[in-house]
Length: 482
Image 1: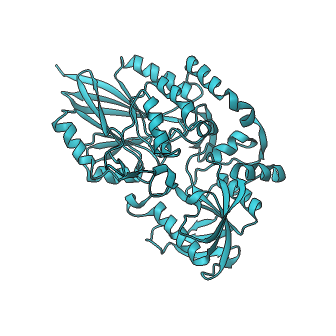
Image 2: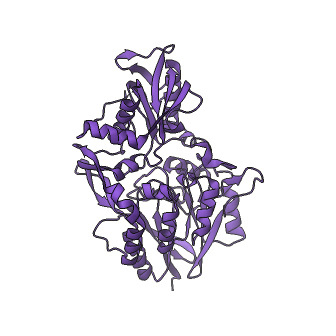
Image 3: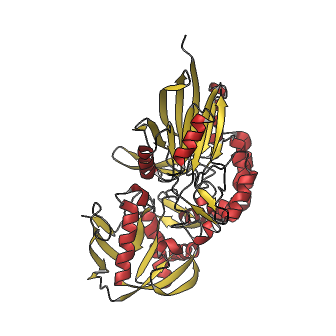
């Protein structure tokens, strides 16, 4: 008689603080469409249902980018989410933007969770000791399932310095084989699951280099894998963002070895039933913020989203507001991937904070033409590098006031074929005035005469909308691939 065992893996990832249902972008019928999805109440009820179906043989894992991204989460430095997440019955998480309030604050948050934070690649600078557990083992019907965590390795490389105060991050590729060996030889693990916030291209490369991982739950890049990706003997998936999707893997084992895996990318639709207890909890938690967040700030005649790698309508709205606030020639911001779409109609304060939840002060700087060229080439390499491990950004840097014709496929410092400031070719020796938000917009090594404008990003957006609403943020073709 066959000795069959079954369990289910559920991936939640890159929720970015979206506690409730929200607009999401979908590609359907050859175009972009928008509808509401997500919300922890629906995720919670889905988890309850699958646990009942599987008689508890379920492991639910959070890929990180959890404690950041919306106004209430940022205002409470993540605290508002703790009891909500503890209600879900998760088994483990790893992290990235979760370090936004500093490592000490994140340690306080993780100490309150009823599940562990895992990372084989985050170290204390003074002691060189791991900051978190590297792995856990969950035993289900006699099957030992090991879960290993890898946090985003770019926290101390491209994020603001306070994210990584007193700690450092490695890629994890050197540590991973050792932990796999320990788990197989000493702990006698039957299945090895990796939750990794390195990103999908990076995890593809890692799984080609390191043997022994059965299932890799990838995070960071917001990919929606509609089918499993096989890398050697490893199954890999990634499940979108904002809690709009769950990744479900139903695993069948025979004699403690994986026999079959079925995968579904589950859209968390409004038809999903809600956990009513959690709904009341979330409503009470958000009550102090409702009046301000629901206030209308303006209108848009077109949908605003961030779902384009070269340029986005949502960021163009932000950049236009920054230019109006500062009078600069150029505007720069990071190519962030998070931020729920805004559909035609009203724009609320909530929408504005979702665009730029850190709400930084807009800064100004003088850049030479050479610095602009170097900065953009560096960013294009971090976006499109042929070496996945060197892809350390989000999307392409968001810019207004310039036009670049680029080759995506060529290497470092050679992608820009022609660059214009306004209608004039860039002069490497000339000075240009620029505004930006955060060091990700214009890294500290570039420019001179940096100054804080005194105007925060959301205030600039509100003022812009007061003047220009209804708006229609276009795609200008700032970067054109040739």
